[in-house]
Image (cartoon, rainbow over all chains, first blue to last red; front, side):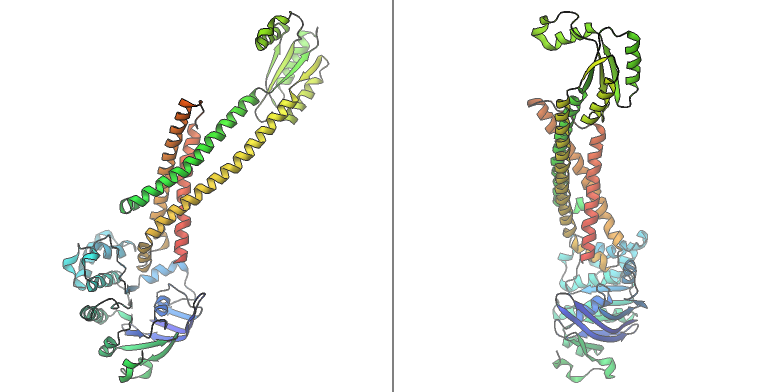
Length: 234
Length: 273
């Protein structure tokens, strides 16, 4: 479903961010993307999301190639993906339900369908009682749940999470991770960039480790569930 | 939408647009009044052809018909010696008693249409009139016409250059105000993109907002200009105000600047992020 083929990405100011990256993520997979800061994790997520295009090579998402896609078709492709960030990116002046509804409104959903869908999403992330709260009235974990609900609004086939637990305490981290597992169990693929090795070790999911813009380890290719030494690698 | 979410910023953009257009409007008023004064002066450009004494009435009246059919000519009038005397007395005031009836010749007075009052055209019409045998002398204040025409050319050029400069400044100021409004909503725009909103969808509220702000700014500017004009009229001298066509044009220009400024600012923002 997501395929990187010999992808290079060079930024004019900072130089080479990715070199010769190739991997494939199948439908319904749960993949961790890890590695030190500046290793290229975020660049990979941006390429999946088509916020950036590769300098060389090809990124294919849902059968659409980064080489041939036209600019105006990018929004349509993005609707098949949900994105969650470390800093939540909620609109501070709108209620929780308005934040979620926003994702449906801007993609032209039927107005009559928005209300019920928002309620269902709030229930799914466990925030049914907070519908009318403002983001600042919520804890970090709750705000991230709102962001996840918003990311799920357009029924994405893949959820991309960039350090979603980076700002959260241990307990909230576990809660968010469990939520992501539940979402994954219902068939949505998840690609999660994280520094949290403890989480990776416990989860036993596929892990791709990056360093200096290259993949240095992919547990799927090693054909091992997860190496015991994983915790020392970052 | 923005007026509700960011009232201070919106008010600021509207006032900025209003003042930029106000400055442009004041300049426009000055230019307009100078032009009208010059036009009034130009209205006085006249060719006076003196008729030889004793010319028969038939010849002059046929010449009048001919001259009236020149494409440059707006009016032709025959001034009899008696009328010439009355006019001379009126124009010379206290020296009026120096004239005795009969010393002034009859003349054909010709006024030219607007757009045909430049020195070359005036001289060419005068030359054609002089070709009649019964015309003694033709006068049209050659030097005066040339000077007036030069002033007019300078005023037009200066007006165009200054006007363009003022308009340019207004566009830049308005563009930056709108850019500020766009930046203030950068977060909202980035989220819209993340959830898959099309650029057109993101752009449209800004364009509507730009037109609204531009129109409001234009109306305010018109009001300010009108107030300034009335004040000047009351205390300094009376000046003419824009007619409806110009006033509507000014407000429409405000709306257009608002629209273009928004389109430019949002477009740049969408390309940059």
